[in-house]
Image (cartoon, rainbow, N blue to C red; front, side, top):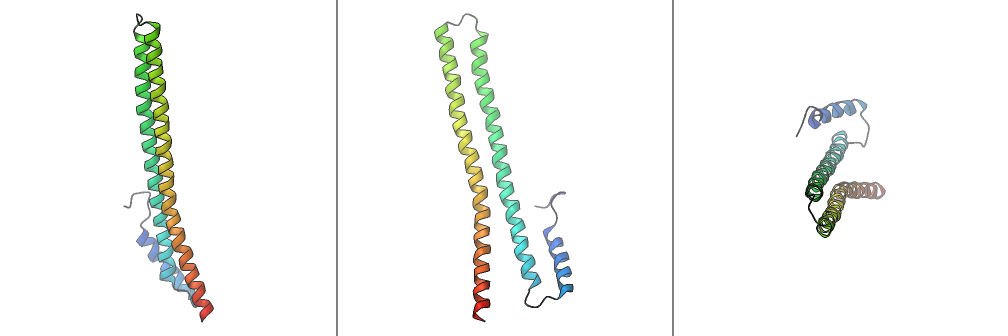
Length: 141
């Protein structure tokens, strides 16, 4: 999904192919080289999008949690006639809400990081497999 900040991959690919064709390097397929790098860039973009969405979701959850805990505490302070025992119960509920929310936020952040890293790890695995295959072919010839 090209945006004003995202370069058009196909245009860049064409430009790089033209540039590499001028060098005429034996044993190097410029189109394959560019295609691999294009896949690497797309993978980085995908992992970044996953990480950004995770960060947005965490920030959204933090705001939701802040509002809920603040509301709980405001009720406690707004009612001057509230008994000490009732105030303690409201404070306890706010604390538990914050604690449970923090755990959920931690899980969300961890999952977003894991998902983004899994995307990058998969691409790195593909690159290593391809490198190993190419090295094996060279050794056999």
